[in-house]
Image (cartoon, rainbow over all chains, first blue to last red; front, side, top):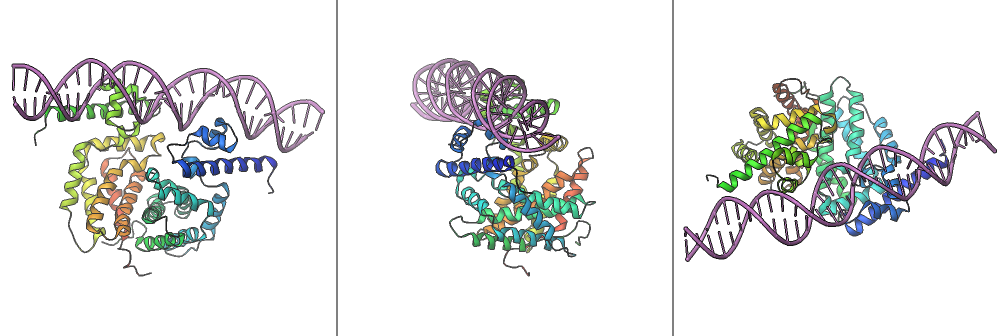
Length: 194
Length: 194
DNA sequence: TAGGACCTTGCACTGAGTGCAAACTACTCC
DNA sequence: GGAGTAGTTTGCACTCAGTGCAAGGTCCTA
């Protein structure tokens, strides 16, 4: 389980590239930063950048390798009650409250930047992906219901994020997330009344 | 109100470009079609293409100019009851049922194409935009609640779309949309009970 | 310590998207 | 009807994202 030298070096390069991207984009704005700039700042070649990230935006939004594991664990620890939407709210609330530190910097960057407003979805796409995996594991024979759970939660997270003023502390974002999730209810399709 | 020659010609060029894009992408796939190809097929120059569409994907997903007006009218005709989510469902159901013909071709194209699976959101982004305008007009002092309504509806539409098998008739898509929308409820934040 | 797996890098190429300036076309107002 | 103006088309040259390939380097394993 201890990392080999290769794995360690790979993670280091990944983080150097991520760090350089975030720093340069913070300083100059997304459009004014080229991949060459990032690669140079991270001490690697342009070609290596593309070995780690498929696109320029990915360097900003791809989740840290360790984050994936944490999210995975969170979905496994989640309660399993008769109300899947409540369980999903539990996962979202835990995730947001835990506040992955690296992620929060990017959050604030995107929220504050006009030119990145087109990508609000990207910010929590990996969360939504994890939720979708959770949901489809739980309801394998109901793709509509499973996707509906994760997509709706994703929408609520996105709305909370868009409404959040990045100048205010992160707790405010947590509060908005709670309010957004609390205002929505998702039943399994087929059990609707009306 | 009758179009000037200029307006008519502009609309014609817009539609020629859209039509060429859809046709070529259907034949060859998105990646294998260049903007040059599209421009040539539409009988204009590459540079003119970019006068009409900011990106290649926009040529596929931007709503037909007339569609915007129709959507606008739909949001004005919508009922105004004490249950905004119900009103929103009415708008979505009407829109989907009316079935804008041009749009449906693109829908089917995207749903059937593996390489466009990353863009499912784009398909109904303009609908979501119209819904957001409607919601923020109705709840100007509650941005969270307004966005939550439109984003959730958008998520439901997206899920219905992703779950839809494009080989089946459009009515199936309508049915999925109804089921998805019926399974979700959005209250105004602040009026939640747990 | 030798061979293979994996990683980095340079090079050359395609194609998206943009700024600019010149030619062209439709509209307007006299 | 004709001159001026505003909007449109187009070519050209440019930047930069992203990809394929092949040569060299580094780590790991037997």
